[in-house]
Amino acid sequence: MKKINNEQILDKIYDLADARGMRIDDFMAELEDSFGDVIPNTDGLPEEIVRELEAARENKKEMRKQERMKKSDAENAEEIKRFRSIFPKVSAEEIPESVWEEVASGVGLCHAYALHVATENGINSRAEEVNERNGKMNASALTEGSTEPVFTKELVEKMSDKDIKRNYKGILKAMKNWRF
Image 1: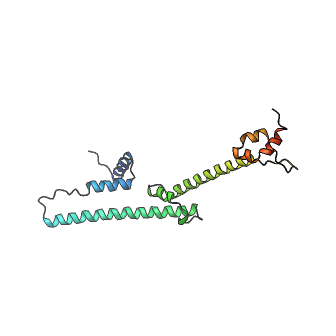
Image 2: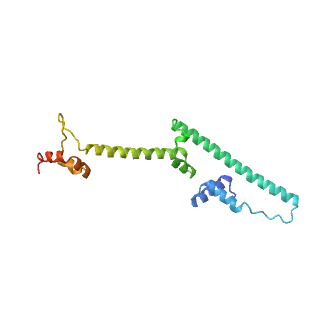
Image 3: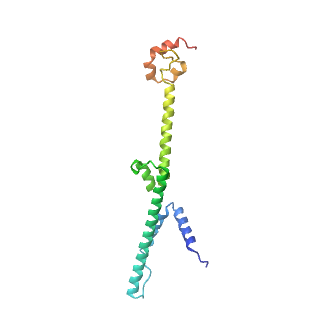
């Protein structure tokens, strides 16, 4: 049988986690929950050695947990450092709850916040477009030197009922110059 190295084992574990649609940390926690309580057969071993094996096993489990926590803390610190370099003027209090929810689900802070900013800019851009279009359709379009609104047929067709009611007299006056 071919001997495999630690890197191949790690690759396989990542593949298994991906196949289950899980993050590696969640997958490892599930493995530990499932198999962590399995105690090897210690029949025939002296009680003292069994206790030492159990203590070593718990110690190793605790060390792996601490290593994961250190790695996670280091990754979080690096992500915060990266966030501060990309968004230097944004404080933690300014980050919306929806971004923190994304971060909790495994998305990086920089990516979650950038997506939030892009979405907000898209919404604001859309609002500006609507406002600009509505401004062009405003019923009080004035011609140069004129103090009275000029209503074209096209402009009136785009008006809301409320705008038509408000400008009814001016529209009737302007209709005299329309060509049908």
